[in-house]
Image (cartoon, rainbow, N blue to C red; front, side):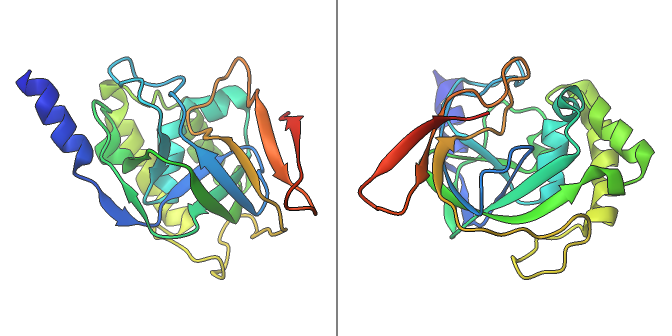
Length: 211
């Protein structure tokens, strides 16, 4: 009983800011993510629906780790919350101190601020990133080393939409969708589901299956 109460207190002890979410899928310039139960996460993590975010791009990358290698995902899209949002601290996420992972529990609008081409990073760094067994205690030291190297190459700080892009290029177009938050990828079935795309008539929507 005490342990459950403590978990709830830690979960609620969040903060307010703007946070990042990285995906190999391009959802357009503006997207609204909705919380969903996690997939491919540590066995200790609760099944609460959430949008997983981090306060740094590097934190997002080392949180995904070897899933990027399984997908052979070299082109990545960086999204940031469009406004200040309130996040909660994760529960039973063993690498949260390394990744800076936080959770959002309601529909949230994100803006695409950057595209990253991993081909432009050192090959050994990309190999190490692709090999990370994220979510395991034995991988924490490796995650820290990879994160520190990524910080040197990606800037190691938050960026604004008008900031110079250090790796890859900034991209932009007008598009709004509502999709499940894809932070924890299903390797067997990438991004299956439906999205609602904005069309010219604000009272009209169309559904399409995401690729």
